[in-house]
Amino acid sequence: MTRERVYLFDTTLRDGAQTAGVDFTLDDKIAVARLLDDLGVDYVEGGYPGANPTDTEFFSAPRTEKATFVAFGMTKRAGRSAANDPGLQGVLQAKAGACCFVAKTWDFHVREALRITLEENLETIRETVEASVAAGRETMVDCEHFFDGYKANPDYALACARTAAEAGARWVVLCDTNGGTTPEEVAEIVRAAGTVVPAGRLGIHAHDDMGLAVANSLSAVRAGARQIQGTLNGLGERCGNANLTTLIPNLKLKSEFNRAFDVGVPDEALAGLSQLSRAFDELVNRPSNRYAPYVGANAFATKAGIHASAILKNPATYEHVAPDAVGNHRRLLVSDQGGKSNLLSELARVGVDVDKADPRLDALLARVKERESQGYAYEGAEASFALLAKRALGRVPDFFTVESFRVMVARRRDGHGGQIAVSEAVVKVTVDGEPLITAAEGIGPVNALDLALRKDLGRYQPYIADLKLTDYKVRILNGGTDAITRVLIESTDGDGEVWTTVGVSPNVVDASFEALTDSLTYKLLKAGAAAP
Image (cartoon, rainbow, N blue to C red; front, side):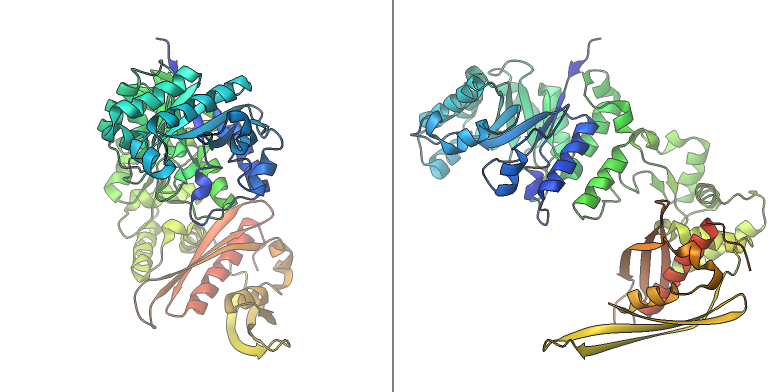
């Protein structure tokens, strides 16, 4: 059976840029365009040339090699010719292969927002598309508020879509701008639009205000849409847009869609989707959603012991697709709800070889559950779990012993009439029977402790020279000033490996120090440092 082509349109750099807290620099935009080009999407919408200096500079040169680079703008103003509309001309002059114009299709908006007649609005759509086609651009129209407009006045909404198609638009994209439409409504309205727009020229642009953007996009495809607009990790204003990192695996891996439709994302790019999703989050300085479908760290994580036991026998018992298809991996979490199957799986995953009949495993499992009840969370701190397991099996040498540490925080004048807070730490350790005392000053107590601890570890100093702390998280486990505190520290080294360690204590500095010492011990073990 011949499969129909579904085209993927990414609007991360335009609609996604409206996300609260997200601001793209020019370098960011160039990097994201490269990620998208490598992924295999068909269109990359870069923004609105002329709207701001960054977007104007971004469109001064083509930014994609395989995907069609798209400039976004508004339809021309009523009462002006296309040639005399600066906004329209700015879009047409951008170094882009395609132009996407947003058009009002809800009669309420035409009258109240634009303050023009319904017929004048149709003329702006027609003349804008004709000018873009005449300029040699692949042209598409985003029919803003199309679904709300159809519900209010179906004849006029359809007239807008028909006008865009008849004027030569390659794509007529139906927008659920407010995100308030259900999948059943989407299917019905897309089919209605299919009576005025030729087959293969309808698209869908869904927002996620009801959590239905992905479902609505798939419903639109079933009803005849052949272009899907979305964003990486579902970025977008308010609750976001349709999430391409969810849509792409659905289209590629689910038989309902992959038997009928083809997308431009190759299998090897799909296998790198989890890494791409996390790399994008790093670029925009946002924490990754651990619970995101397909690409989240917990997407294939199992905590219950009976589930883990079944997965070890056959992963299909609790997994709807193979994790490696999207570059993710299976995790059987070691926790107070997990059993021996979880423990054995996690030991194998972190590289701890042990016979499943080893009597020490029961004691290790009991120790894990005891520490979890105290506030430790090994499902997010695999390095500390590996150390706990190896210590139980007698495989962790005492590289160094911490005799004591002390931290002082003081506020001082800064010489400019203001005040600054400084921290000083003193750490005493023993290495090879020799006491070593180091002191350091830092921007905070944990930074000062880290600097002091790593200042002198005797003969182990060369092994930790490339160690860096890359993230620090604090979680209060119960209320009050005497609350138990959990600290997670993420570390990396020159090999590019990243690991996380955990510490728990009523004292946040003590919890931090525990996580710090675990990180150093893990690094020494990883580097093959000789035992004392």
